[in-house]
Length: 238
Image: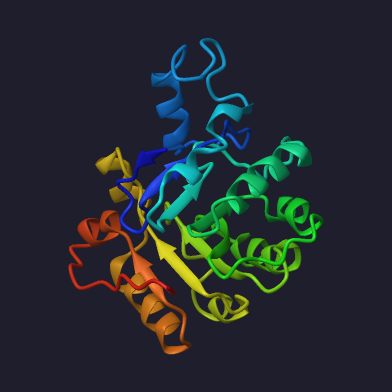
């Protein structure tokens, strides 16, 4: 595992890497290309799905309870991932239950693979969905509620936030109640971020509305810097 530069994560853990979503803004794809031919990444297809079984035991080696981001160098729950691979990673995390795991996917239907295991979600497991704030955000969150394990906490990662179409105005109130929302902006391309990131005043209003209904909001440093918003909330639900 690697120490994380993400503000709310202690370690990243990538026993499975690779993704087929093809998002144009994907930082993980760029990073995998830099690692092509090294560290378990294929020389010709570094972002193809790969299960790294030699990494499955890594959480057991960290004694201090930590916040772990599993498989963020891919999408563990993508449609192309066999359920057996998902279960291998889930079982590995169950061998180190002292940690908090922040699961994240663009395909929340994949969470059914864990639910089918009969796992009672640990209090320290958060099941999340990634979206950019576009019109499919509410539908994706609704799917999360339908497929994530019973009794678990649920969160939404709006990163990079590219649109307010799915979360502004009446759409905001169509969002099922969540336990946490994270907001971040485009990184690595300041010029593109200026063009594609929504207006600050509207984002501030959405954050305030979410906090009124009791949803903790974490505005990442990328967004705090982009918007010159040093007092933006950085709340966590644990």
